[in-house]
Amino acid sequence: MTTTDGEAFLFWVLAPLMVLAALGLLFVRRAVHAALCLVFVMVSLAIMYIASGAPFLGVVQVVVYTGAVMMLFLFVLMLVGVDASDSLTETIRGQRWIGLLLGLGLAVVLIGVVSRATFLPGTPLTENQVANPVGLARILFGDYVLAMETVGVLLVTAAMGALVLTHRRRLETKRTQRWVAEQRVKALAEGGTLTPLPAPGVYAQSNAMDTPALGPDGRPLEHSVSRVLRIRGQEKAAPASLVETRSAGQVSTVPAATPDGGEDS
Image (tube, rainbow, N blue to C red; front, side):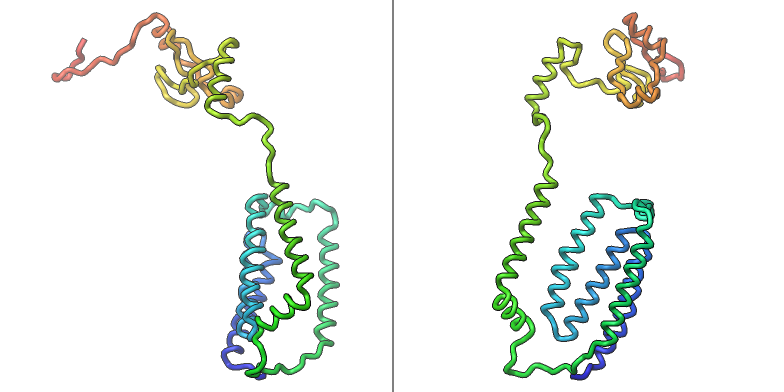
């Protein structure tokens, strides 16, 4: 079976891009970029499968590897949050040299196998022969049906195990609205508040988050400012004049402007 001009053109266009993407998988610094390079290699390989007359392998390559496995890799990367600085940190001393030696040994083995392999000329399908997906289905679900069912059970078991491992057991009572109300009522004896905490800056000259609110008696309410700001020492003190005015029961008002430009007393 000879290669057509279209197949040769497709190969010489995709093959260099696949090699560049494979090299990018090894040399890029970000894990997400490496995963995207691998996705490009898998999709290009699926295109070559389909162009070579193996549509089943091409569809499996896209659906299973690119659509399922690579999406799982990206989900784990987003969940764990691997950064470039983390990938450059060597947690086990000497692992880079060990990986380099193992990769070099694998390359020597692959080169030796490929150099000694003999490729028989391809033969086209005749009208009486079944297509690639039909023949593959007969082999998988005929001769190897037990192995296929075993793999399916293992995959389902692995998925259930992942769900069990990621399930978080509740360690405390569910915080419903009724439960929150009951806890506030119980906390009244210890000096708690029944109503929600006041917002910062209420009745003060500023409504900033670090300015405490003033109570009805004019005293600043410390619990109106975030505990984090109080620990950092970033809480602003209420103006002393305003506190004294509120404590004395006076209300400071801004004089209104009269039409002639003066102030109304």
